[in-house]
Image (cartoon, rainbow, N blue to C red; front, side, top):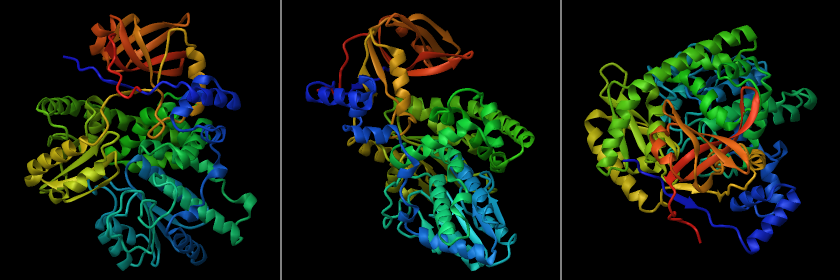
Length: 587
């Protein structure tokens, strides 16, 4: 039996609100529907709306607002003067790889010798390890500078060890810190309780970018560089966009400025590595979007890390030779194909486990198989969340010899903070870290059942205080609306993502035309305002019978390019039978 999704329809705009929206449309010279969407999201004045629609790099906050930044820059300038060697230690996901690449490329412009390390998730696991610190110490002459990116905030023992070996340590991270901070010389993390930086939701590569910005400022102030020949920081924003979108950071305020500019840099494809990556992903024409990063670029970069080869992705992004970049991109494509095969093998089993748990009224899903590859548990968790809209932890066995540990990646849904959920169960956890939407953890296999029960209880408890689950509808459309005008106006609201979701529209009691299925997908067309609109419901083939009758269709409007021609498409979010809706949230 197919369970239909409840629609949560935002209140209609009328009265005094409608007058404000008409004034917004007039002052901004935009269609009324765009003004109404902006008003719904809190941009009620022309100035606020213009700042949102036209984010400027000049509006970025000072990097020195980040606690620890001044000390970090002083350490780096000391390294410039003393010609000390620099080690950059990153992580194996997109955020960690792009943060590493950005900082390595920038530090090389200081004429410093820099080496970098990205951990193999199969043999080293996440972040720093004692063995990686020891190995890196053997490669440099002390005193050397050790900089972490996208990791380190919870590595108290490893950082203490690095200092004992003679390193000066700078930690840059964005994960939730514990009460005990590592004893590094400088710690830059916007989530520090004593950090007043206005953007708490920076990605790891975002933090690395602000470090590069601060270094550039000081190098100019102290006349190491002249302002007109200092590195152009905008050229690094392609990395920032990749890492920020892939790590599902909120795309508002500072992050919106960074990502919007970064997408422009990716679209230009001036770096051989970025160009080759886009070629393999089939992104040859048009403007690159945040959606392209999420579904086409990031999975390819991530594939290297998932299979224990993050160096492959870093080498690609750092490559300045077109031929080399093409070879590396092809190798990355092969890794992505292998990742898909491993994912497909595990996904059916994971979905069956999840369905059984949902049928037994569990709300915190905890899945396990010793056969699942550690590199795909995160993406399996994401797929399960997409289907069931519940927090999910996907476990497999630790690959270390004779280990009694189980390792998991988890994903959550808006309103259920996964990091806080794990804090409530930490008496059963060996270690964990992450964000509200994603986390990683380790438990002893003997404690797995107890932990699973405790996690489910915590989720059930937290769900009582969250908003009702459903598909949020931004606006009800009619068959008289101009879809092309709406789709064109939506482009100014991009990039879409967490904090700035892509608008969802509703057509009530609409009859879909030419309804067919293509593998797991639903294909159809709509007749709106005299024009035929192509439609697709990805992985919605099971709704074929429902779609053959009048429906209430929740969808996103897309402007796409098909065989070289632009067209408007409706992408299904939900399809319900065409009966009067329970309009939760309507006033």
